[in-house]
Length: 109
Ligand SMILES: [Zn+2]
Image (cartoon, rainbow, N blue to C red):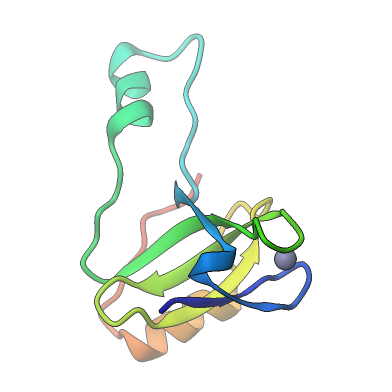
């Protein structure tokens, strides 16, 4: 069972208290973008075997959205942070790099 600490209210919430919201840190494309960019925004998602950044909502708690970094193989949670954060906090990426030395994440823009 997945257990995340909500970064807003500090509660340790299991997955029955949460709703999954898909991949975090998507670059949004809208009017003025190319068809390929818009198609990629709508349909292309990471599906890694390993570290993944996801959006979750604390539906049976404070109701707020947050991001979480976890491993899709071991279900290890590396940390959570507010959804308004444009990039994962350095503390979390450092924690991942220590535990997964070959791990790399795409450049954020
Ligand atoms: Zn909460």
